[in-house]
Length: 123
Length: 123
Length: 123
Length: 123
Image (cartoon, rainbow over all chains, first blue to last red; front, top):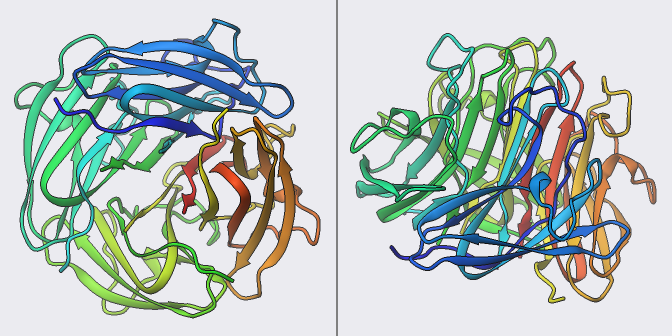
């Protein structure tokens, strides 16, 4: 299948609420980068996370196999360090082959959930 | 009317919740690809759906007539197979003429609905 | 001021819920095209609305003065015809000078509001 | 680190609700421009705010240091003037080095919050 996308992507918004009313993984507050690798070669992806008042964290290394999607939750990143909660951040996502990146948040701090999503900025 | 758009689009996010509190089609949880064909030729559209851990599903074939819009619900796709619920997916949408694709979700798992929308990635 | 934007924009999603729990204009369900004309010449804007099963409506004519923004509610369009409620639609927005178009919906059918927004597709 | 982004961005939507049910800064209704400067030079950013019926406000000057993100709340801008609440606006964001801009709103006028987000229009 022919690849689609770009190799450098940025998400300027990021925030992991510390609280959550959901009692399952599906309804726990989360901040996600959805990665699509529609091509026939595995994508080696490197993520750097930016903050307001300190040097960037990372790189975090993930692989998206050929013809697969990975919905990556920022709050599950551990190596080299977890992303702090209740803290503004942004992210830069670089891949060795074209991918597509979309940013989604599910916020369940209150009784009812709220959602946002946008295609990231690619170049 | 002059066509507008691209012929290859990707939506990296996709998720059909299995639950819903809405009691009508309008308020049932759904994941939608809104397709606009503003041009004067019918668009033959092919959709492939990507997962985290298996080969892609599809292609699903749909037609958008000239000067029409089709708001396609992923949970209504049946041929060659339905999209599983509660499962992360992504989609690649290809057309033989330029179209515009926008991704929208209405989530009514809880008492109050939540919405997200973004223009897809086109190239 | 230097203009920014494109002259042809498309919004593939559109839906005006017939119901609303809000008791003010601010909290009434609405579907909006936010138009920004940052340049020094007035923008003459023409809008066509597309449906699933009939020919497009319009054109609707609006003007955005130089250095102004217009947050246009589709449910307030009247000439040549109102947009039907509870009906899927899409829109094509053409301007004689560069503008920027963003699509926003506030849905207050239920007790709590839901929001979506995305930059439109411009070319 | 290599910069990413554009130097001119527009957000056509803007609205600061006057009410809020949140009792903390995190849950107070807010309209945000998230700015990412992934490069190695500080970004000098100039913001102009557009209205429906008066000349633009600003410029507002902010700096985003190298390798930092700034999540700027429009309701905290004060110089040269605060942005009025309950008023439609739009914004033009110009930087001397490439940055990425994403628009996010948290609306907590009602008991449950609502969210929207989109990458801004860059050129």
